[in-house]
Image 1 (cartoon, rainbow, N blue to C red):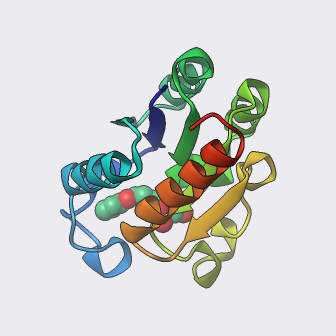
Image 2: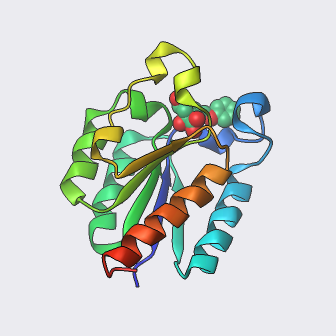
Length: 149
Ligand code: CA2
């Protein structure tokens, strides 16, 4: 079975260093470990990556087309700006769950629009790192119900 790709956008490498009130105390390495453990418990390998560049994120989505069973994506600020991210996710047509640590609808109005949501199966936000585990459960159920997991 192909792994689930978990792709994280800009500045998420700073988790645990600043703004713990918004994003929680955990680091990106903690998040990666949590995802690997949750994935394993559900029978899925995970590939966890973070980038500060839009093009790299798009290259990883293209790579996922052949190498992944599904995608969990926290596009970070690109969520609110990137038509390119929207187009890439639409093109690869893999089951995709959008995740945000914070509740983007409780924050500034510029965070209320997502270019990812229209091409995602579902969206989870406001649960901190637990949202990634919920996304893994949801994606695992989708893959099992479609005979791909
Ligand atoms: O809540 C989320 O997961 C976000 O995707 C995080 C993005 C933000 O632009 C989105 O609106 C919501 C920002 C990630 C920046 O992460 C930081 C972590 C620690 C310190 C500073 C930034």
